[in-house]
Image 1 (cartoon, helix red, strand yellow):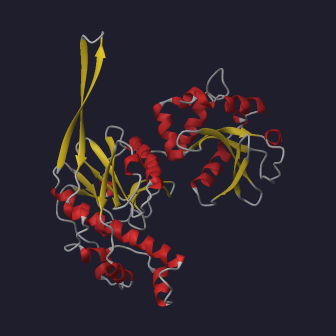
Image 2 (cartoon, rainbow, N blue to C red):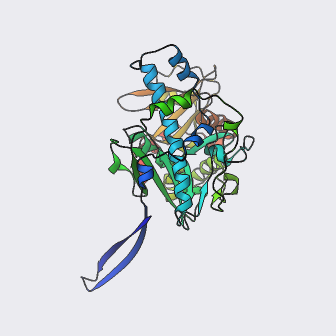
Image 3 (tube, helix red, strand yellow):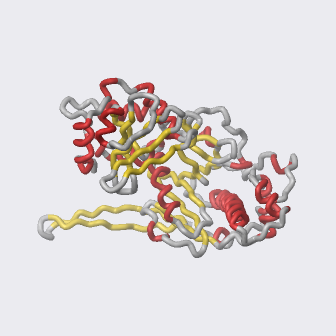
Length: 402
């Protein structure tokens, strides 16, 4: 099942008289014909044991809505994606059993015995029976499947969308998080998409890409939509008996402390004896991973009076005289200063000041950013204030962060 490729990297030293050879072994899992064809002959019954949200689709069917309506197309496409994920997971479950290099495979859906509903953080199964990493009851990342080899952990992402740009972008955070919680393992990804998907060459080197047929069995999908929930199809399924099948609570990993880590970053960045904010502190490989996980790192706050100098048109009524300042990864390659202001009515505004425009956006009340801002509003002290000179110096020197 595995092709082992030897990539020989050599460097010429001392004008061609000496060579340094380094061997790197790359593991490449190959897709089987059964997975490629989405052959469900022996797993079809299992698909009815998964949890689905089919209420909206049932209503659309009963109202005889046209299949050309956007509401139908969107709902049906989303539901088909759910079924596709479960089909592929079932096939991966079989693949893992027969593939010797896979040492452990994490169970989810109807195969796991306990839902860790009341666990606050860590790698666990959530209420919808998915594999997630949580912190303070909030999902940091979700994984469609997770398995291990002797020296690596593979996270699996599946998609029926033909456009892969957003999928590719999601890998960054998942990779960084796994790097944190499995520091001694190599992190790899298995990407599973359907025929006709574009952008496959844009995935990172650590990703293996499998391409399957489209899930076009409309009869099966309709059966699942209208399947009645019975005692039989809500009970736990049993995977083939094998020590490699494990549940999330048996996975050993290094705990990632979400909010304490953010506080540590703030304090470290403000501890330099010479610089108000030590920009070079943000240049290490580890901090690069933190940017991928958090997107933004908090460095202090600016008073509303000083913020008016930066943005004279600012007219929001805010709760306190503090507008939080972050260094934010605004895209894959660019960092910028971004500000967060909490209004008196409780809404949180994200403000980015650029030379040619000002961007002001609402943040979700139940999102991570709101939780982060609440956290920093409690711990920020007078020593964390940034004045106009500080702000302008940081803005002008963000390129120091490599």
